Image (cartoon, rainbow, N blue to C red; front, top):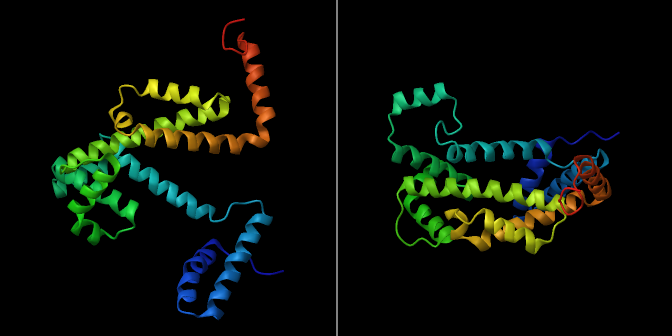
Length: 237
């Protein structure tokens, strides 16, 4: 029985493959491809997704980053650590938000700390122009606030899209509901097409994910409606 390929070995092979191929080292490139292919077959046979642990780590990093902007009080940092950092560094809000914005730049653009800090103003201006069409320079506080509103809107749009994907409603009706719910949301109003596209993508992904189980899903929904005295239109029977 061949030895199992670990996730770390498969990740190393996946990252090394283009390097060897680019240098024309076909022997080692073929070896890396073989390791990677063996891993994917192994995971498929076990009924598992490839790189599950790596995905979980990335998701955890994403959650931690978002908490810096969504949790306006402690920024997802344990209170004792935050108080200690404030005592040692004594950062004002603008400086603190600059640190969080740099974390975002490193995450989005794959930059190291030094590069992100050295090009901070340029990156912030380029991101603001691309994301919001903003021409004037923003302070770190202004940028931080906008990113926070975008993250809040992103979460709300995704939750609403999953609900829409499970309900089976018409896209045009669901988009109208989304616009109505966000009528006073400045982040949504600044980029309605962006949020609508994201909404429709998530709806489609949700429907594709539940398609094999749709008879069961709709059966459960129907039973719940009957138990609660609701007919198919949502009105009380």
